[in-house]
Amino acid sequence: MRLNSPLLTLSLVFLLAASLSGCLRHQRNFYFGHYSDAERYYAKGEYEKAIEKYQAYRDENPEGNLAVIAHYYMAKSYQALGKNSEARAAYQEIKAKYPDMVWANFSETQLKDLTESDSLPETES
Image (cartoon, rainbow, N blue to C red; front, side):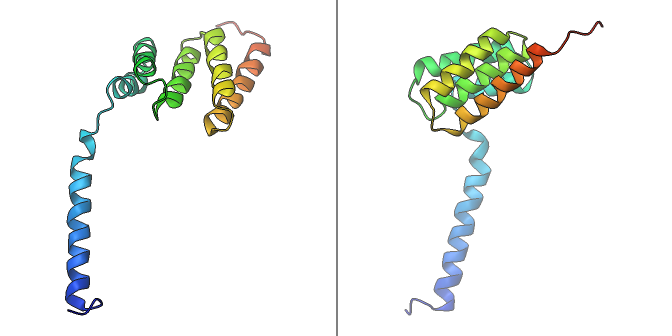
């Protein structure tokens, strides 16, 4: 059989399509424990619960691939709750611990936003 035969090409395309469709069908089955739970809580605006789950993930996986992201979204959750000092501390820790990652840049932006919002006069409701 020649390597560039139409039958071989068609077979490879079919095999690739079948493999990808299997991946897509099972994509929703990926579950990352506490991190996945935290993401759900964050999306629903349940920030206290999100913080607990992000912290649980970080405790179990301090060097895990999602640890810095969990840390960042903990800070965002603190910020959403108006706990700006906790948010600020978390953003600063991210910058110190992960200076070469994009999450340090995102944290710097959030710190600037917090500083600017702190300097705005309060308005009466």
